[in-house]
Amino acid sequence: MENIYDHFENTIKEYFGERMKTDEELCRKIWSSLANVDWYYIGERPLLLQVSYSFRAAGGMIANIIERGDYMDWYCSGPDGIVNNEFRYAMRKVGYLADDVGMLCDGPGCIEKATCGWPDENGGPYRNTCYKHYKMHNK
Ligand SMILES: [Zn+2]
Image (cartoon, rainbow, N blue to C red):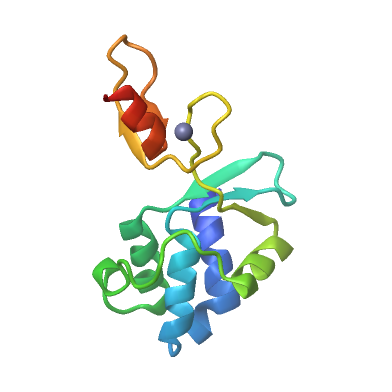
């Protein structure tokens, strides 16, 4: 059975693959739509499944689809975490929903982006916080 990553990549290939081979701008937009964005499958398959791509993995997938080069050709080729509208809608039509909010600060009631992380010295879960909560912790 095709796994969720294969399904996701094959979906992109099917809808965008031919254009991606000659359109670098589209490849950059798709890289931005993948890097630091969690995608959830809510389509006809029975399970809720998630796909997430690192900067390298997003670049590698594009190189794979256009059948040339490697991940470095697309690594940081655009801003990360910016989902292109055409890509968002085309993927939504086949069941993929993007969560492009990203990780939020784990401070109580805080809705800032988590940009800092450190291991909890009391053995608790790894902390992910905004800069303000990081500074409060490290003063
Ligand atoms: Zn915070």
